[in-house]
Image (cartoon, rainbow, N blue to C red; front, side):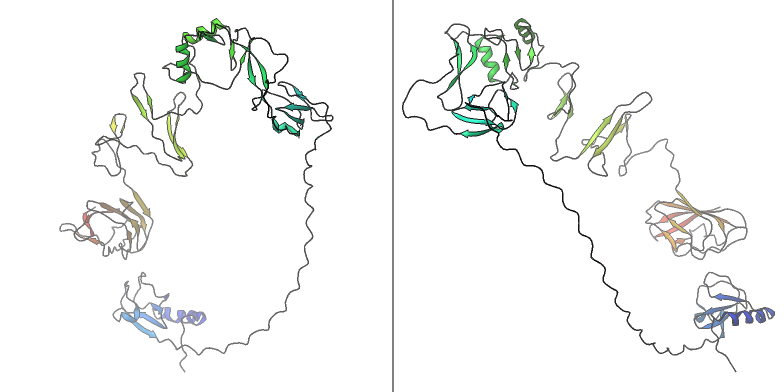
Length: 481
């Protein structure tokens, strides 16, 4: 009675192995295109067992290679599928989870602003540099014909600050009749009067006097001297920078400070005349000055006024160039910085000009240039052993195989790259003490004088050189050593 044979029946195969070894037959397992088989070796393939007729290695499957393989045992047919089992019963639903606890109460809101406190009576006229209080009893004042109560304690400045007061009585309508303006009883003779508010009905003492005759020949203001024409020109062409400051001093013409600049009249006049002050339109040299984030226009000029750097602004710029100096033995550095993650530095020569380093034109990727006294180090890759070695000619000039332990069945299978005319490629192959066959595949060809090597030499390094043939699109062998 004949029993069907299945290659996965391990016990049965082990028993057969004992028998086959006695008659010179050896079981090799599943068929492999890269394995070298001896005559009589048995392999499994598809449903059957095949016996090797001729020793060697072939990539053709056994059922299509009657020269090298013969059927040893026919495989049986597949059995019919079993009946599907019945579906299991559904599980019971789980119980609902418990409700979560309530969140904690939010924090109390901030206290409201205190209301207006009881105030002093009667209200007094508002004045500069005066302390006003918002605590009971709060200070009450009059200003521009209206009454206010202080709501924020403070000391007044040079102008009335309505945000620190609460209006309690608005000004009534102006009368229809005409009459004298109303001013303070303490006004001094010859002092300049200033309007108090915007009604045109109130004036106040400015504390300032004018010195000189009434013929228009006044030539000094706060101790600054010059002709009327010079002063008018300075005021109209913006030679003076203003900062909102006030003049200090007595009312006798001896004011000696403007916006915090102090000194005697003589010192101030001398400073203006000998160039100690920089004017907006003047050409002056600044010494020992620190400029923090200065805004430069379109160029930086040298000491002769010629262009040194031309600056072009980019709207909404986020990337820039940072320059850092260096200590002893260090090198100053230009660094690309900014908001982007990857930032290049772009140097663009004009016309046929070149970018130079140390007076020598720098080498570029796409430029046509001649290199002198340069050494180009070959790019290499390596592997110990493979039947289909892996190399990429785009980034490798020499591929090294250091301990070949199997025949190379196809050198082209895992060779990649996009070679161009003139590209070269070298292979260095050393076996592991046993000579190995080499099959080069479709991407290689022999030249008229040099044949492709077909085997290694026992324990001797084999070197083969190739150059790309654009006509045949193959690597042409030009040397073997």
